[in-house]
Amino acid sequence: MTMLVKAVGAAWDAAVRGWPVAAGLAAAGLAGLVWRQLQAVRRRRVQAELLAVLRIPLARIDALTDAEFEFALRDLLIRDGWSARRVGQKGDQAADVIGQHVQRGRIVLQAKHTTVGGKVDSKVMYQVKGTARPVHGADVAVVVTNGGFTRDAKAWGDHHQIHWVDRERLRQWAEDGVPLHDLLRLPVRRPRRTAARRAA
View 1 (cartoon, one colour):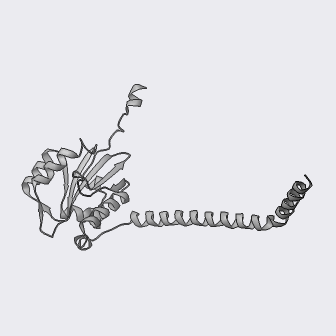
View 2 (cartoon, rainbow, N blue to C red):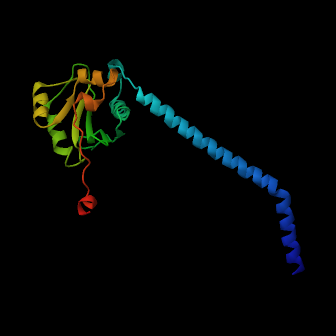
View 3 (spheres, rainbow, N blue to C red):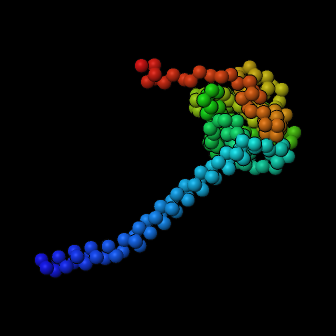
C-alpha cells in the first residue's frame, strides 16, 4: 500500500512539474491545426476568385488534351455558379461533366475535343438523347466542341432539346465570359418535388 501511495505521489509530482511542457505541446498542436485550417480556407478563396474571372482563349482550348478539355468545361460551369464535377471516362454513357444549379436544374455535358474544323455528327446527339435524362437525370443536355456540328446534328439537336455549343459559342462562353445558361437561354426551373415533399 505504501509503495502504491508513493507511486501515485511520484506521478502527481511529475505531472505538476511537467504540465507546462504538456500545455505547450497542446498549444502548439492547436496553433498548427488552426494554421492549416486558415491555409485551406485561403486556398479555397483564391481558387474561387480565380474561377470567378476565368477566361480560356480558344487557342489554349485547342491545345488541351481530351481530359483537360473536360476539366476546363467543369471549371467554366463552376465559374457560372454551378456545382460541377468531371465524370468522363471509359463507359461514361455520354456524360463528361455533370453540374447542378439551384435555378437551372441538372446539366450534363458531353465534350467533343477535336481538331479545328472537325465536326460532330448526329450520332453523338442520338447518344446524348438516349442517356442524358434516363441515365443521368439531366434537365439540360449539352454537347460541347471546339470544332463544329454538321447541319443535321444541329437540326436534330434543336428538335430534340439537345443543346449544342460550337466553336463560336464556346468562344463566347470561355473567352468572353458569357454564362452558359445565358448563352443557351436556359429557363429558370422550379425545384423538383421529392417523394417526401409530395407525401407532406
